[in-house]
Image (cartoon, rainbow, N blue to C red; front, side):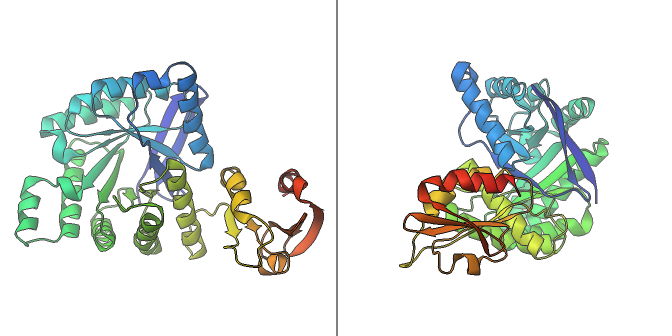
Length: 367
C-alpha cells in the first residue's frame, strides 16, 4: 500500500504525519464554522489557535477547513502559521482558491475534480502542489459525480457504489497522467452499504491511501452507529488509512468517536488501528452512589489526550465497581462521602469525595 507524508510548518516548527502504508490510521475532523479574518485577531485568534491545538491533543491528526473564496484561503493561511496542527483546505468549484492556498504553510488540499473545472485547471493545481510538496485528496461525493456517471446512475446502468469508485479511479488516472503521487482518495456517501462497497471496489484496483467515513451520518448517537457499522468491516479488510466520523455535533465528539471506533477495530485485530485510552463508565442505576456523568465530563478530554493504551473505569457503585472493572488500569467509584480509587480491581485509596479529583490525578500520574 502506498503512503504519503503530510507536514506543516507552524509556530512550533515542522510537524509531519504519515498516511497509508503501515502507519497508524489518522483521525481527522472538520472546523464547523466559517473562518473569518476577524476570528484570528487578538484574543479571539488566541482562542481559535488554542482550540485547534486542543483538538490535536485530543487525537486529531489533521484538521480540515472549508475554503469557499480567496479571503478564506488567506485567513486559513494565516492561521496555519499560528498553530502546529496540520491544516487541510477543502475546495470546490474554483481552482484559483486552491492555487492561493498553496502560497501558505497548509499541510494538504482536498479538491473535488468533478467540479473544480477542466483538466488544465487540475494540472495547474497539481503542478504547484508538487512544487510545494503538498499532498492532495481526491474527494468524490455521491452528490457531485461527473455528468456521465450521473446519467448512468439515473438510468440504472450503474449502482452508486460503482459510480463512486469509477469516478475516483478516473480522477486518480488524471493525477497519475501528470505524475502526481502525493494523493489520498475518498468516496463519500450517506449510505453504509455504498460506503463499504465503493471502498472495496476501489481497493481492488488501486493501492492509493484511502480516507473513509460516512458523510451526513446524522446527530451524535445515530452518526456514531452508522459510521461504526461502515468502518469496522472496512478495517477488517485492511481498508482505511485516515478517517473522519462526520457528526451533526462538536469537533471534539467527532475525534472521540473516531478514536473509540479505532479502539474497537484494534480489539478486533486491526493492527493499524492503534489503541489509545478506553474509558469504561457505569450507565447508572438505582444503586448509584457516585456521579459518573459529572466525573467523566470533567476528565474525558484530559484522558483522551493521554497517549498510553490505558483502560480507565468510572463506576457508579462501590459494591460492584472494582469487581466489574477488574481489568481497568485505574478506576474510581464511591458512595456517600467516600470515594474508592482502585487498580486492577484492588482498592488502593479510600478518600473523602471532596478529594476525588486531586487524588485521581495523583494516581493517574503514577501509571
